[in-house]
Image (tube, rainbow, N blue to C red; front, side, top):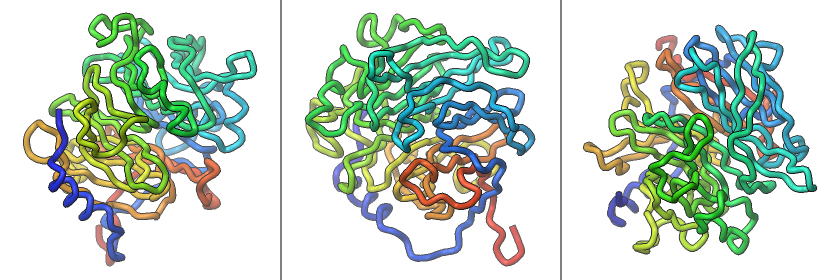
Length: 374
């Protein structure tokens, strides 16, 4: 799959990337959980419970708009998670067959036992309302204080997809993202039991795509099943990416970033200045103006963005719109709940934000009250 033409791309980027004039937002928020410690991922179980990861190692549960006092599980994470670094308990995915298996998958940074640390993908099983028996499925994923990726999502094919960062601090150290023998700088694909799918592109490897810097979000388009990933670019240069992830493709990092027209690499479908994190597609009728769009939370720009796909199945971007600008600070994750509402997790206590007294929060997106009317 290729991206939009350079002329079209520049028109879209120019229209969407300038900060709009002040306007009344059509969207407001209802806080359903507060005083969280750097939540990273949100996922609903079939029974309506909302699971939330906190970077220090806790999995929390929101039930009936109330945060339960006791964690569902506590994992031992590397001590750097307490120092505001990009480590700790991050990704979370609920087994699509949770009603039968009672399994929840996580991605986290652990002490490797030799003075270093590594990222792991593990699964826990619920027993008597608590997460038990953590089982590591993938170990030794390269980790660093920054660029760990760690977003988890199940695809329509029943496979678990995971992002990994390049685990480096500079392009000179990021070469592993180009090596299909390394798990750094990749999108991984695994069976729910932790085995390698037989149809993965590299024999015996979890690697699904490579050449990624720090992918922070995954979303499957319901109509087509296509996978979109958000990816952080280099600071201040406006080359944060949206990519359509395809089997065995090379996305360029650290050799290329943004639009390069290099035939060796798969180009992004959008490049902008926002630092994109969690993402989801909107279905249903809760938000008629958003239906079919990709919604992305951003960190440094503190926005909630709407990307409107062009008609057809190519998944090019027709337009971009700022839905919420700075209202809740840094937005780490956004998902659509089984009730059709969008739910956001803020990330203002991650060492880079400015926490409000009740941060961090989980927020339900609702229609704004304007002039006493909804």
